[in-house]
Image (cartoon, rainbow, N blue to C red; front, side, top):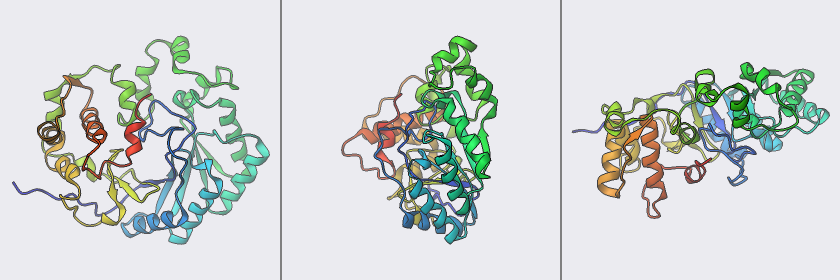
Length: 332
């Protein structure tokens, strides 16, 4: 059977990951960010190259995320300047507010960022973030935005009253939320808050949600994983890698976008694109000794388990399993 070649022809809406290092280790994080990552930040030249590629493929505005972009204010300023130079608009910068210390410093920084073209700060508000960040810092950033003339975009505001019912000077674990709001608090969160069950969210929810048989899950995408073509929420990272769909831990070199991907350079992506998770399972089991479990909550769960197994092999030939620290930081 002739293989179809994966090709990312046009980009629609997405963002730039400035760093994977983060002060938090949120249980739902798609990109498995944490304090254990190396404290690296995207360089201005790399950001400029990413922006040029993004514009070349038809996208003219992006958001900036991490990790935590504001852990390196000077680096973020260089990113904003690079976006302006490339003619790519910045819709918003995401933040968890961990960097906030006092209002004057926050206002001064935000005013500097506004001069470089930042219109909006997306401020993370969720019980996952509150496990690591006192809510008083979030309130401080919201107030600083108002003073600096930057639009505050609380994501999501629905959780504000629940989080504010605790002492805002301290972080609070999800167990505290369950004790106050009911044992089903964690299982209900994905219904209230957009969470893709990939990355660390798989580890969090795989024992909460009922699994389905291996056979049923593997059969879901026999015609191929078309999600790899989805560019409605794409990301480039600090090393110039493009993350296809929402498949964190899989990467395409930025310079390879716009043309068919060579199967010899991207064997896992080619397999997923043509035969889905069943094909990936067959490859891993027959050639690399992978032994699957009996049940999984989704095909993404199974795919992640297979890829984690392959990435852990010391002689793994799969260069598309990037960045490698993603797989090392999946645990809680």
